[in-house]
Image (cartoon, rainbow, N blue to C red; front, side):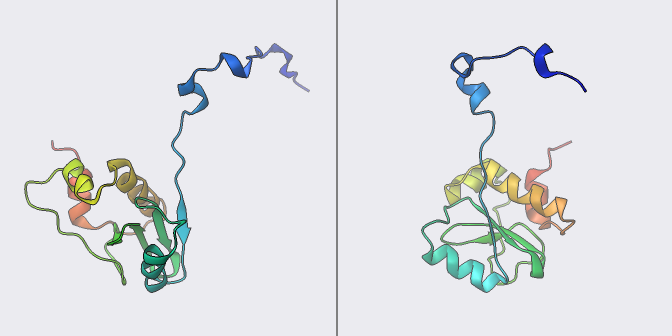
Length: 129
């Protein structure tokens, strides 16, 4: 059996902030349908703008907001999006007062579940060639 004694011991007080907080926690709220997800974003204070909404039975992933929107091609009762032709992802996210990471996290979850991504958002998140 291997021993952990060869591993250097680091005092927690010696860790830098970036080492201790090397990730951003993401909240994913699961719902049985998009109607419930939409209603919850309007009434549940535990759901913050930018949190991820997962509606597995409908194949929908969205982003919480007072106007919650889907990042998947299937939207259910969540809003679909129509960014302006000249908008970049940062501009689109800023209009919702959320971060690009909030959108990217929702898209990553949808992709991991093999859900089709809204083509408009996919185009915003794909770097120009």
